[in-house]
Length: 250
Ligand SMILES: C[S@@+](CC[C@H](N)C(=O)[O-])C[C@H]1O[C@@H](n2cnc3c(N)ncnc32)[C@H](O)[C@@H]1O
Image 1 (spheres, rainbow, N blue to C red):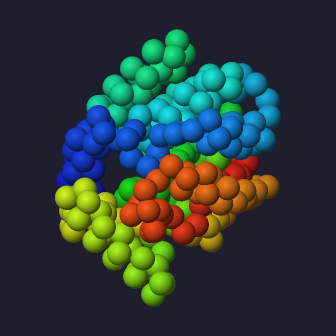
Image 2: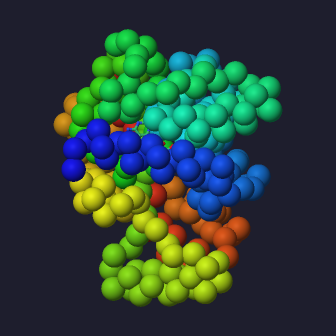
């Protein structure tokens, strides 16, 4: 399947999901406890105020908004216009100023050396060319700028994990009358290198390939635990196996 065709399928899905996305578990921040955990993480990882931060694949802007609230100058990019519209509306309601731009993570529309920090959350699984993306991100980071990737492994494919996933799927089907859909069409799924998530080792490898320095890893098990508190059992059963933030300097 050609890249352009796959990308239009990806955009279509996110435009369709835009109005319901924030209701899903594990995306929008649901409690004060979770908000405090994210604030703590970003305050540690970006200690200086007023940084030029780019949130790549920003979706409905949950991280962009948080970063703006922490006093940074934030730009968010995403391929799906309707996700950006939701992000824009949320930001305006909070009286914040974030610049949202339609753009491709694999060819971001920015000059070299523009940003102090790049943040990206839950994006790698849906990138067709993650190596190309990381290369571009290094170009648009300032020297000594920081990349922060928040990601993980979404499905545990051990025997126990598979059993729990099947039970979770059956319960969701019975209670919500929904057939769980993972990713996109079969054709698009088959060409995504990180469908189902990205183990930490692989994330580190992407950063090593572009020679990012001072690699730092933060385990985000605490955020998984907090998020699980608000979830019904059928969702909790098979929710995320591994979750981390990995950072590097240009
Ligand atoms: C799982 S959502 C994550 C949204 C947000 N980062 C968050 O953490 O809530 C993935 C987002 O990536 C966007 N996306 C997918 N491929 C992209 C690409 N090549 N360039 C920019 N955005 C992309 C989708 O439109 C969607 O908004």
